[in-house]
Length: 287
Image (tube, rainbow, N blue to C red):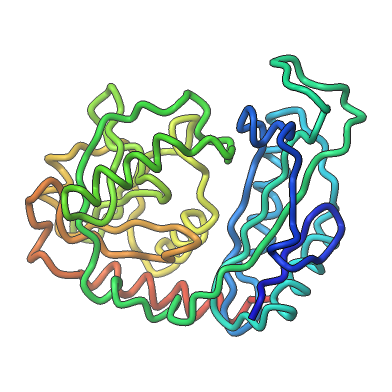
């Protein structure tokens, strides 16, 4: 089946969808994006993703071409047109097409470009990887200084994924100059010590994850102690458990870092419990 995508107000077959070569998203990575997961044909954590989208747009002084209600309607239509039961919706908004290349921002009246498409992932909630856990490597965090803005400049995270792949692993965790782990290439990072869940505090150093916020709320309600601070690679290697969170993986156990098993080298009970809580609650509140 040909996938139907959304481009600037139109639903089109993907092979008919085009964006100008002068679009600033293409030339300057001058754009933001969001990924919203779909379970049972419904949108999960939509309000959080909508709020973060607006935060990213505001940080780049970029106008939004769509209201939150219009966005929800458009997402639902894409889900319907593409028959998505489990999967994801990718949304990207750029500063638009000024008709030429320049480092200077175009006039604010220029219409932004908005595109969206679905990705069908039939086993998203029952991913095999969650049963065995991720193996990660640590690499220096060489990204720009505002990773809290969800921009489309993802080259270094992509390189980090490839470094992990070449090492026979699933992902890379970034290490800042202070020696602390910031996050994964496309996810937030955590360790577990006893009843404590430790993850880096919110700042410009990490993406303010929507799944992160929801999981930490559920963790606190389940009587876990949450400590927001940097942790090192050696702390992670000595931890009882570790895991990552993101819209695309929910709660993913991490069982090894830099070749050293974490805990017994298998997904631990805390990560498993948080994944169950997240999926159960998201299915109840999906829209």
